[in-house]
Length: 348
Image (cartoon, rainbow, N blue to C red; front, top):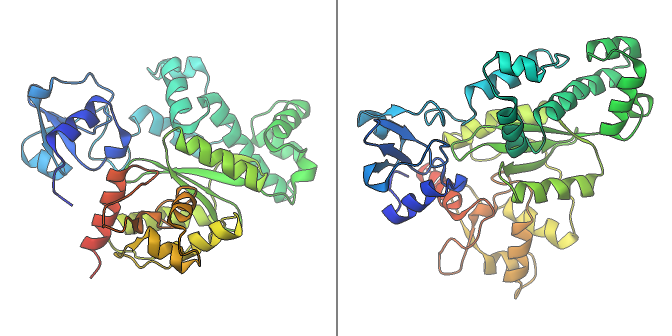
């Protein structure tokens, strides 16, 4: 786990700000005494002024200070202003934060817009509106009076609330009383933020928060479930949040929340076989193909692996080439290597 990658690979990773290397190494700038994640948005230092460490602790012990922009000692790399905004929305989803309010906080509204578009796939205002309506949906299903819901959601008129509700959920509040939706949460991890989605039946999405793969997986979820997707949480996502922490600390070998993974019969057989691969073990694509009854289907199971919508939880990272090489991984080979190494180190 503490072995460094090659200098050339680490140099290319931080020069290109490759998020798939987050958590795998930290680079330190001799001229400033600061250490960073590979994705740090600050100006790139000259390679001759950089040295590398496998862990944040090693960088600290060498006398470097953590960067205040990319927060390398935190489990997540969200800037403090973004954390504050999200916390404000969680405390009071009806709160309306305007561009003037952002400017008063010392944050450029254009920066906020770009950040939320990149991180969450929507502008901050769209995110805040969806979060308000997520709370409204919960109240609708609790049969709370509509006038109270409108007031609690920060809307000034029934017509404005109904139109915003219909645009997001596709139906009027009265038709959504017994409806379903997919709630999305953004969870920290040592390998970068994860996006998790769950219905009331169980987890249906867990993906690294990077386009274009995340965009493709979200599109697949929307198509398969035909449900509105909104920021929020539920019991399954809260369980996942706790279990991911335990997993990355080496204390959890098997996730417990129910999983919902519609697909073709073949895809489902592959994903169900993935769930049978023990923690700390691997299986070749050929052996996986034989296990699902397709002896010459290594390429087919590889494609099904690539369409798995629940990284880590449905452990497609445990499938490797016949010769022991890593093979492919949607989250990036270095993340796959990290996960396999983590599990080997905590197998006993």
